[in-house]
Length: 336
Length: 92
Image (cartoon, rainbow over all chains, first blue to last red; front, side, top):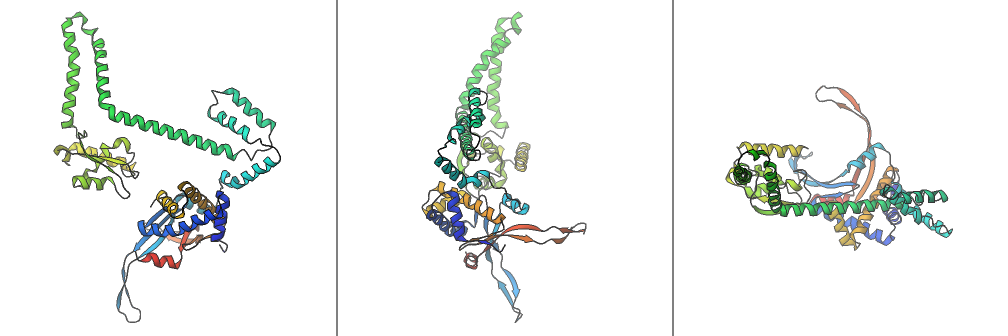
């Protein structure tokens, strides 16, 4: 451990690796140096992905004795800067092995190879790249292109290391973009469902009713047809009554909401419950009311909106069996 | 503070845009990890040094059975802040 990577060396390595000017790398490192201290002063904790967490730990004041005089003195409390490496980094250090990401490893080299090939008048890198991509993503739909791509590499087998990093990057972007599209679509659907569910349910009901008439029609055929209409109306009445009775019995129905609150750093469901209901034991309601977009009650992303339902007297009863069940479910979800 | 907010801070004070800053931060981490694994310590000017230290093997005692075993030596990534920074952060 005698060797050191100095600030200057780090700056140079950073500039070459990231492909930016040394001036930019310098600006970045200087800003990092200043801002890390600022951020620590502000938040007492700075997490850096891919490295670890810097944290200020408070050391409590303690009593001691002056060695010379035997007099009791108090050593004042202070802050200590601690660093915890990220789990992956820690494992890496412990294992002692280091596998360089092939793309990053080739990073600057790949560009050099491209340049050299370009000078030689060979530019084969671009063409085989795209058919290869399509071959991976849509192998069934377009078998002709597979043949093409299979053919091209045969003709030019030499520049193997060069085209490799590029398609990987492209594919990565493509996958990410499609993922984003899918997520947005899902969110839109969920939003549409949320706003239209009442209308939907009424539409579904109206759809179900005619079906039921058809369904029930053959059964009472032998008897009088007058009964038929009576039978048809019954399910409607039942459904309506269920809807009316439910809010009274089921504590999980939330009629109106006080407001919607966003999760801020350090906030959690229990705190919001205490703020609005005066007691944190009611947090399971918050989880239940927001179950549709919460995966885990204690791991909520910052900025997540939390709907705060207005609780009725029955819901505020912490001794009821229903509340107990709700709480148990929520606590179970915590342990997942 | 999370990485994203920190990136925002850096980009504000350096004039680089967020994307560049993020890329630089990831690259910096990669460079640092590689150098650490190559047995080098990283000197961060004005902040401190990151280095891999070896913890010696030691005898540990199982608290319940009183059994004595040897905990193997292991490597650890440690950060040593410079004295200035230590003093600066002591009182906040």
